[in-house]
Length: 418
Image (cartoon, rainbow, N blue to C red; front, side):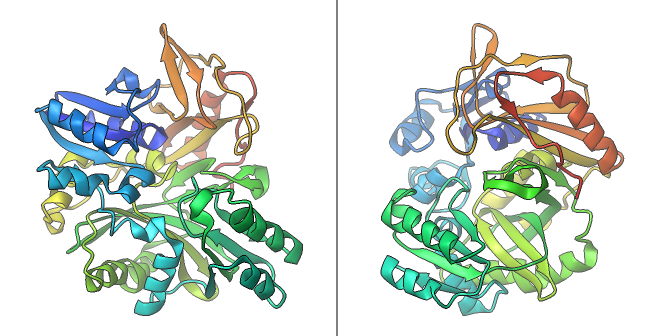
């Protein structure tokens, strides 16, 4: 039995690492994959994750592929799962219609408003003139979001009118994110602490995973630009059972039910980005897939068989699953290229020391040539370690980060401190 994973980042490496534990899987493929993934799967770098027709052709040519796991946002939003299913192949991930909860901020905000799911107050704009006019009376700080996909970088937290004006101009006039910026959402800034909850969903049952906390800013003390994520730990130290139960009843289950009411069956993983404030728990954002780097920290703690869970989701039998988790805590420290999330150089050789056995270095932006690894992206590696306490896991992670080096290497030194 063979499995294909679509994607080429740290999240996909973590998924492949978990799938590899199932001894019924005889071979893993990854499109396009990366240097680290190539050590455990056959990578197909000549096909992009967004080349839907080529991926379909690849599956047709490899008859032993029992399932395709579609991990990134772009192919989900383009309808890769729909295409595979229409051709009779099993695929894990939401359909194009279901992936709208991430692919369109306008869709997701309007869905929450219609079905009473708690979220920040907001306005939608398709005209830059109207948006700029609105900023005259807006309360600051305010949050401005590009409607569509933007590699996790389409959210601006603006402290004043000048910053907000610049954000609107970048997104709508300069088209920094292309057509993703044709519409924007301007919403109230919520104060509190953030928590991420990934949940398996089959349209009938929604099953939350263990909590995690991401670190979006590029620099220590949550300074610098927003990134795709500079590190994560699991579980959250503040979001306990009582908060989880309330979120399940007011957010998780109502989201699945709202999609069903709209005629959309969501089968895959929903990522709930939550803000816990004095106004209660509210949704900051949805993703229609595993988050990155939260996946690295969360899947390290999963003791249940991931492939079996994927099958139960596809067959809408998730109600039969009981997730098992390690009591240990985990942390992922992302090592990035200097300059990320803006301009950075690629092609630097990466040097690895002797990594501890209970740590895994997940590769995100790497390539492998002649037995050596080279940088090939903004986020390069995710050093992920387990410990009996968060402090112990953190100490291990940073000890192992110090065993890795490449030119212009950058990482935050405060992951898991707050």
